[in-house]
Length: 160
Image (cartoon, rainbow, N blue to C red; front, side):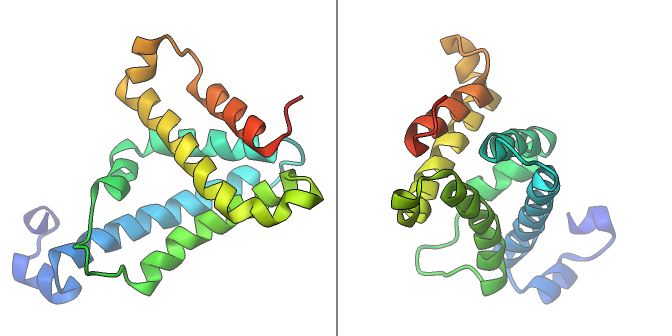
């Protein structure tokens, strides 16, 4: 990478401090792009906002396949906490989705929004991974985003 951008490896390490910090900086930028994509996608949406958020997830993953996958492929050592800035990028996306889930839930269940959102993100992510790696095609699923939306509706209790 250093050679490609015209810098020495030493310069990269001087700027970022470590390989892990470099990868976190790259992945943090990807998270910021993803957050911006989600915000733009939801900006003028009045109905089916959760469905649009799912569509935005699939769109971003498809459009930025390798950068999106890199977020999930990278692991810090177990005793290392990601920098606050990185955690804030992850939390920003999560908070957007939590707000959408909370809005979709009936008032009596709105306190479930955060834990439910964690599970729903895992569900949507799993559907997206299976779509992108071809597993759903093998299994005969023709519309993974719609299948993810179906699971979200079931969990939130908004089946129509």
